[in-house]
Image (cartoon, rainbow, N blue to C red; front, side, top):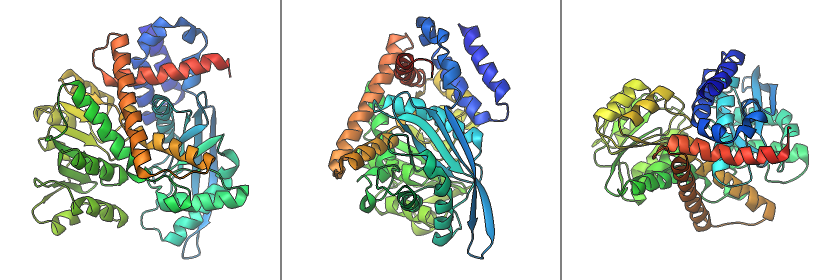
Length: 447
């Protein structure tokens, strides 16, 4: 069977040689699910793997818009609708200069299994554009979002494909796209999630991903006989995910001593809490994408320029910035620091080699597709709220989110036990996510 899995991997590499991010996640997932394929030869016979690694639909389109100087700009938009076996395609839109099919396909492929783990009726998809909202005026962002949605609207809908936000796409961008969708489709539906609460959005959605990550990390520690309270933590990033993560860590009694951005990291031995949490959002909203001003505002902290925070000694590390931010050298720092726990907040923030090194050295790794699934889970709750024309309170949302994250950990841990994998949550999450999708695909025939 090992040869068969390798053939799947080699065939994907041969077909998409210039999409390293996509190939990275395909390899990680396929190597994990090998015992499932051995136990279910009918999955091999039905070509499940070949169908999973190929999107059901990929859309590419031109996005022309006019900047504030009256000059025409042209970007490229994409949407990859990967798998709808469990429900309508669900996944974010990313606006960033480095967006290209390889990144979106990696995100879309991961989304299949992440969404499956939630237990909710949603398939996997992802989209975006090579547009950078940083430094753009609100009017320019609005014109771009309207132009982007003028093409995308014909491919999405509440029972077809429900995009959300991602890197570079927050409440502002979602609001502009939703307005344009509503105008073009002539209906008010829950076709986009991540909307503001005055716009049909879900209370608590902004912090949902970060809160979910911490709930998952708490379950990891609990499984190992430890408590989150009193633990020192390092978090990378300072956007909504990192902010929600820091806030919930503080609420559960942990202490965040470092946060980071592209320009370096902040070491704050007193803890990033209280007004410092709020300042994280101010830094993100500034559009400057730097954390250095934190040290000016809070002089008891220290800014370390041009370096990553993984050299700071802590009990728990949570990368919340972007893909592949943690490589082998970073993993070695984490191991040297004597850490026992590492929980991924961003999508695929760790190289495959670094994950393997951490696990080989006794670090418990919480994989992103399980740990950060709280965001998409709450997006699905927003879909339900919109469909039922109801408004849920933050307490309702938080209670459902915590229950979902506890169950995701349970599913991953049980999958490990079922296949004799010890407490390998990386493989367990992949297996648990794959099994639910595989069963649905088998029931639906060759489509």
